[in-house]
Length: 314
Image (cartoon, rainbow, N blue to C red):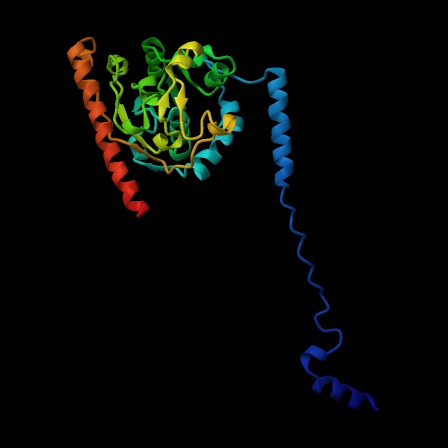
């Protein structure tokens, strides 16, 4: 074949077949950077947490509140109860202030005060600012070994006006249950009927610090531990307010302490302002009337939540 014929064949060939055309090679893309191992992070965080626990390199406030322990241990332990067992639904979370103090006043029930823990977790997990609720507890809580330490670590303190006012002046959300043991110790036949609100000490604390009162209604706790009776002689022997008899306790022993999986609703009501009455903070009549107003607001909201729950269960 002559050189002329060879050149003609090359010219007639498709461009993609022409030898030595576009020989520049495109470099392969760089390999994707591997994602950090989630488990490596978790192990590192756990080891760091344990190191700080052992060396004491963690902070607690003047009341004993341990934020790191609450976030890393206590709240994760409570979330399965909150999300999967009780399936808590929250309404009105926007009524809690984004910043600054408020007194959160709720009904109390359920034999064992799980409603306090669920309320604190609802405030933290549902509020956009993930705020902490500083609970006021009865003196019995702080007389029980180990439980008292856990309560302090979780942010609780003794239910007294001086501690409540110090927390409120520091801009905290403070939670109180004015029914006390009268609420948790009432029989199942009296469920969702509010007991007396004591002497209204919580109103006095709110008036002195000029913070709003947030009424809260909790439905579902009454069915978690239905209290059918109270064995008073044993309660007096143990030094407790009551000794509950439920469908599962004490018949099943420790298994009877497992709560029944009831459906919970928590509703935060509209704030009740205290500023207009702050100058009358020591007037017993003003305190009684405001306490009664908050109590009636919670009671009416309980009835409405029960209707909502019944309608949704049909």
